[in-house]
Amino acid sequence: MYNVRKTEKQLSKRIFRKARAVSPVVATLILIIVAIVGAIAVGLIVSRVSSDTSGQANVQGAGSGTQGQLFIGGSTTIYPIEEAVQAGFTAQYHITLVLSQGGSDAGMQGVISGALNIGSASSASAVNNAETDVVNNDIQGVTINPTLIGGSVVVPIENGAGANGMLTDATPNECLGISQDSLSAIYQIGSFGIDAGACATTTPNFSTLLASTGATGEDSSPSTTICTSTAAAGTYTLADGAAVAFSACATQPPPYTAVSRSDNSGTQDQMATFLNQHPAKQATSGNWAGLTESGNPGVLNYVNTHTGTIGFVDLGFAEGAASGSVCPGTHTPQTTCGVGMPQAFTSAKGGYPVGLTAAPVTMTTGAQGYIKNGGSTVAAETLSKAALKLAALVDPLTLTGLAASYPDTHAPSTGLARCFYLVTNGTPTVPEEQFLSYVTSYNQEAAFSSNGYYSQYDITSA
Image (cartoon, rainbow, N blue to C red; front, side, top):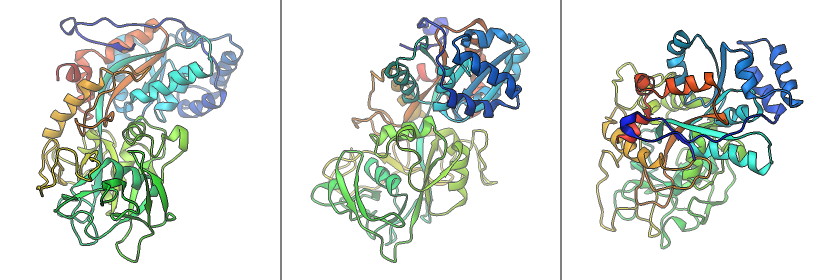
């Protein structure tokens, strides 16, 4: 089980898993040393690494050996929250927070190795990766203990020539929607084109980019909608498990570029989960095809400034609310930050988007529709909170309790809603407990909302 911090009115006790001590992962420790080198001498950290390796130190020792410091690191998504509470926490408890980032997986390895007191993970799958690592490798003395602190929703973003800021096919028709299978294909291909008529307003497209169309819907092979540009033509396994061949692009249409993360991240892990591991998580397969940028800000700002690109970020970044977002001067709160957000969903075998029929329909904006460049995200926020309420029921250690949620409540997928966790090795020490209590208190709500995220209070009351 995992921990959910709530007020007395909201019920619930925290459930702690016991045990403390660490097992070394020396290579990971050295990487994390680089991340926090500015806060403490390298010689001291290496000395601590050596102690961990010889089994003479543990995370309890790391926290109590220097009572005035807590080493916290991992998710670049959660990092702005930690920064936002840093000054207030230090002033109240006289404990210095040594913050670092580098992705959720790095945070989890930091907890396992003992280099970090608290690791941050921006998806349940990242926590599950750590638990699986501990169990499969029989790492003694390590107990993954996650605490739910909040969450967000991952959204696809585009910078295209369409009137709403979306990509267009070669006709040109604007692609207002995008399916799970087409996302799966383009993130395996990397540089791609969209064939003429692919996003027609009539059957079976309905302005939606599908991976293919035909008698078997998106499983039709070869694809009649997406072509490869720089990647070799070939057959790829899509999110629904079907193998579809993609041909090389002709002179037209011009190529588009898929943008993903260069760092191991919970954001990308969540997208990989939504795509049923096609492509797989970075920890398994390395970087995805196309261009890569560091962190949510890197992906957003690249897509924002490069026409013909598609990426994915947390909703708060797409709104320009989070640290590192660079938006056009005309940007206003609760609107998209220089990008369009196509409607994302899974598709039925017949080739029609779930919830739509064979009769032509008009794509509309709103909570379950596309959002144009500069369009309001208020309805999307409402949908996000409802989805996160379902996501909060998932046990991050086992991933049991998965339910269909945003972007398609009819889909047999885990969706793009994901929760944030702070993870300790076993029962928190007193300083660790103080930080967990501080960051999950109602008084720190602004640390989440100012970054476009949702606290546990937003989620549980949705």
